[in-house]
Length: 216
Image 1 (tube, rainbow, N blue to C red):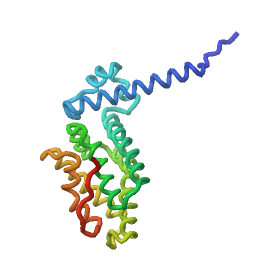
Image 2 (cartoon, rainbow, N blue to C red):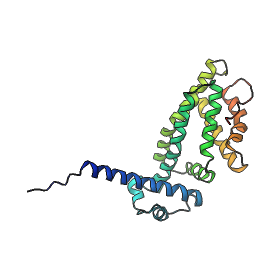
Image 3 (cartoon, one colour):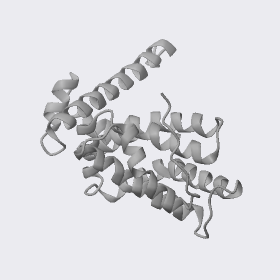
Image 4 (cartoon, rainbow, N blue to C red):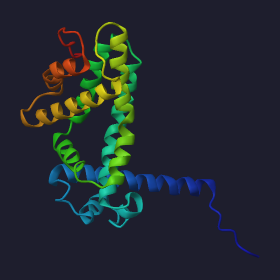
């Protein structure tokens, strides 16, 4: 009689859980080692060893080392996106929510400054497919900035004729440079946002007023 080799539901779920655990172990190891040694200072063998799995699985799960760091970046974006949605759906004026949004991004980005420096520098040299994936991942972030600019104009808190989507790109560039500055000065996340606020205010066409206070 032919034997059936179909997996049971429990066996299939166990296999999926094991794959997910392996993927997370590789991501955790990569985050730690990239922060300690930089992208070029770490081999896939070291990452696999720290994760407790074969380094060949990096190719299987991420398509190589470049795909692994792209996944690390995507992983850092995910909790920021969750926090962003909470702010956008909360109370306050569009200007207050814009300030809160930048502040929460900075809290996440500057939590591990060494890793941030490595991740930002790598975005200048990765391949086209990684860049395309990252741009797609960042679309909700740009859209949030554009929506807040549009709301601020509608509420009479900002003015300007430049398309909100174009303003959003300028705001994101200011934010990115502002967090880079915080790596060297160094500034706390709150102080970094306060320091970049005059440029944010000018680029967004906000009517002059004192920057909102960070939440305590």
